[in-house]
Amino acid sequence: MIGISKLYCGGVEPSDVLRYGAESEKLPSHLLQFSKDKRPVVVWNATRRCNLKCIHCYSSSQNVQYGYELKTEEGKKLIADLAAFGSPVILFSGGEPLLRRDLPELIQFAVEKGMRAVISTNGTLITREKATVFSKMGLSYVGISIDGMKATHDRFRGVKGAFDATIRGIKNCRDAGIKVGVRFTITKKNYTEIPAIFDFIEKENIPRACFYHLVYSGRGSALVEEDLSHEETRNVVDLIMDRTRDFFDRGMPKEILTVDNHADGPYVYLRLLREDPERAKEVLELLKMNEGNSSGRGIGCVSWDGDVHADQFWRNIAFGNVRKRPFSEIWTDTSNELMAQLKDRKSHVRGRCAICRWLDVCGGNFRARSEAVTGDIWAPDPACYLTDEEIEK
Image (cartoon, rainbow, N blue to C red; front, top):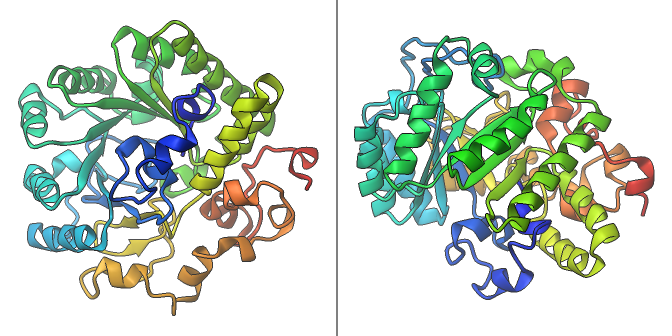
């Protein structure tokens, strides 16, 4: 996760992090990525069921009942363990998490345990009444996915009318006083709509937007050829930086992030090095605090059936199941060879990653993408768009 507004536009200084002591439990949400202890933010895919048919769905969800999902009390047991372990955030995802009738109960339980609760949703099921309930119980944030404007979004989501329902959900959250943001996954078939997304969040006064690079997982595995070329990716990141700067220059700052390609960090730094060398020094310090990809360390996932994964995309490898052992125990068990390697990944990456001068700020990027394309967990991430000259030590 690379905060374009935090880094490129000066929204965060290294001193902002150090003032809180850089511990997860002490840091406000917008600084968590810079924590030094890297207590995991945990994505819980609370259900696999979904009411839409998204072509890039990493969980390959369908609108059917799945019989092996964690029950309410099992979910509460998971949440209690995460809270005791010090995980600062639980992100309820799916499938579509609002299809769980006990979602408000689970959110309330997490908040009472001192965790920050977040929902990742398609937004179509968020009525005014549900938004009011979520607001009263202290939900921290709702991230709602949009794939473009109406025609594009409905095509991606596989259901006519999905866009209109999603926009209602966004507005219902905003009107209820819940912090709400847009999530946009970038592919060849929708990247030209990124300017329209910026126009939309300005018009509707949406405070946050996250632009996700494509990860080849679930139904998204069939979209490898739909990922951008390296040159297209560079142009998109430049566009996102330019539009974010425009917000700041016009006195209406918004929180803009790119997600799932940590080459964005060095790329932002190298651009700042040309434009504002003094700010570039501060950004490099922040990037080193961030440490790049944190799968298996600062980010984790619990699947609908209780399996524990390094992140929400890397589903073919499970480290254990919370029905048999607590998450905290599984997460710290470095007798599992891969778990130990992920906590020391810089010693294991190969190829151009191993010789890259940005390894400390990128962390080797996405291992799930490397495995999906090459079959080798430790091969270079094929989505890294930095040139050989840019990575030379």
